[in-house]
Structures are given as structure tokens and as C-alpha cells.
Image 1 (cartoon, rainbow, N blue to C red):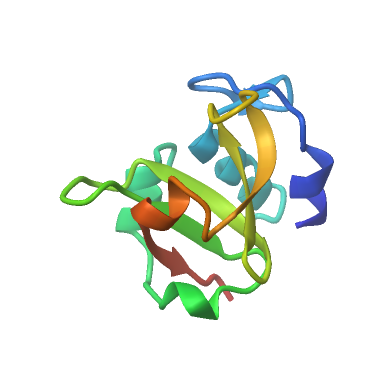
Image 2: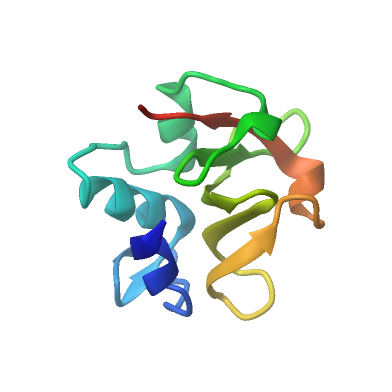
Length: 117
């Protein structure tokens, strides 16, 4: 989480996976790689290899996955604290930012989380 928060404000860049520009899955992939954990490149691929837990059990550092109803996972972020997550998004000012899980559009798209131990 400390490394994630240090990247706050990094510009959003589709396909980006470096501190010069990140998209959502590049952001989580970079953070986990810093800790020796390999993740696939795309959010849906990261979710496909995941074990699922209810979102209300999220702890700091857990991955949160999002999808529109009836669609595959299209967004991923990292739980920061109770009710907040950090992610690379085009919402508002396109950048890495902290959002409330219960805010729109995330509350309507939330799927589940993966806890890595």
C-alpha cells in the first residue's frame, strides 16, 4: 500500500506499466512485481487466476476487481483501507487516485476481491 500511495497522481496511460504512466492492471502488476509476485497483464486475466472472497473482507493490499453486469472483469484496484481503494483510472483527472468503494461507478461494478497471503 505504501508503494501504491507513492504513485498517487501518476498519469493514466492505456497499456502503461511504468511510473511514467499506468493503466489499472499495469498498476497492480507493477506493485505486486515489487514484492516478487507475478500477475498477468490484463485485469480479467488477473481475476481469472484468483481465489475469491467477499468484498466486505477486503484488507489493505488486496486486489479488488470490477465489471459491469454481464461483462467480464475490466478494472482492478488495490484496497487501501476500510472502504477505499487506489487505482489508475480515467475518472475525473486521469491518474492513479484513491476512490471510495461505495461511490459510483465502482459500487455498481464491484465484483469481488483476491486475497494474496
